[in-house]
Length: 263
Image (cartoon, rainbow, N blue to C red):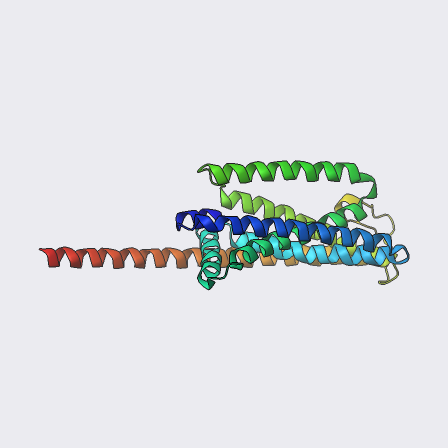
């Protein structure tokens, strides 16, 4: 968004993007505090809340992973950012760009809160390592932002989005097992114990028929949606190429017409 504004000669509006970014971070922090208070005050229904959060995080990650796959080409990503930014600029409102950046950051921030809450409840003994990973992720993201913002370096979108989407897809399956297991523990869902089946908390695998079947079904959904997103992305790429070719042909025709007229 910032790069587009600078190229369009609207550098004075960059501050609105930063304003929305800060507000999005503050709102995400408020959501995190509210979740912490909610968990501390729901001791009698802890398992139910844990299961609900894990399943909500699962759905959000499923949506995000497929969204990233559908935008995993430079043309698709540039078109998406350009359309969103142009729509905000065209409104003429002072808060249009701020709202765009706020919603982008807050959506990811709220998702991150859900994601980490699910992680912390599924692995209570791994809090230190989880926060270490959180800190490392923040450092890497800030470094990537500074490099992109102040140099001409660009992220290779296809491998970046593809790898991130794959990791999210794995977490979707993990959260599916962990979320349903928590609901079984909270007596919301009845569970059929599978004798001899191992338990792997970090993979969301538990010795219950319901959790295993649910994970298998979610894995199938992940694969199917991934294929659909890939097909849609390729169709969008073909459309962008066709539009670019038509635009180039039109420009060439116009130049040829002007040359003939001048002659």
